[in-house]
Image (tube, rainbow, N blue to C red; front, side):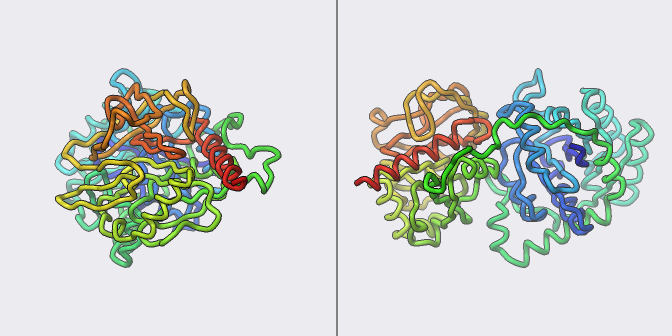
Length: 471
């Protein structure tokens, strides 16, 4: 496969990668190119903006969760039909799981995909020192191909010229963009990152104006031809044997199940590849809004409630009592429910946030409370009990990020599916509350990492449907 591709990496977090990437996606699409976005790491929010701007579902690539072969498979499958791929990095170029290797880093993905790197540097208060930074990044790992630099937060034309000349004199790397410091190019932030694309779409014209300004700024301040030259310098990538993305042979229409997926401003943290793998395993995905809908779509066999920000929409969620009752009734009738993080919070009896207390579904006895400490971890765990997603003894990798703490009414008598070997979990290194056919956890799983996810979820929904049909 010989698709032009480039990694947009930062010298640090908040260097401006997301803004630059969004602007490039928009500028390239405006030129008539079919452009595919990717995100290094497990972030949900940046891919949402990629999808919104590019018109194609963005996908995640993670070297801790995924083998090199799976990374390539996701990249090649996601890029099918695209003219160019733009991969947004995570944190600084070399930041990963450990100090001693590149696992989980942007650099690791660049090497796996034989992908040239454009380094975005926050040059807000430096000029000649930019050259020292670039040389340091170049020499740190010679296998990483740094092929261009974009200077962000430039204070003046003279500032930009001096920094550019320093880089090109001392580093032998071309500066392909100098983006001026403008406060109106920033997307709003909050406690777990950016405001989500789903929420921004609801805000209407104001957000569209920000996107236009970002795109126009990239058009005006980045040499798009030079950018395309870098992308076209990527060598051909040999396609691996398909390991995960293949339709199950002999899957009949009768064997299909309907999984209702919660999707609105409160719940929108899903990996596109996880949804695709559920579909390949025989799931018809239908969407509903816990904030606005009064019931599930017809004929639902299982419910999937992903992560998000339910705490910010506590009023809307708690006032929609018909949906709260629908979730509780579905659970009481042994319906299959899988909930991650925000979904876990929604299943509690109460959600406490900023001195407010909101009534939730009441599936899990207890409450959720928010604190100052933020938990952000890669997670490794083992199934210690059978549940809808796996069998005792199976292993998985995932991640967790939240500000909340679960206060269970009776923790000693709560069944947990997961023993957390790396990470925090809900309590005492345990996660994945099991109640009837419900599983709720802080751990987020990616179906391309934990290979049993899609098949087990769909099979559990199918078994539940058969039992309900017989009764």
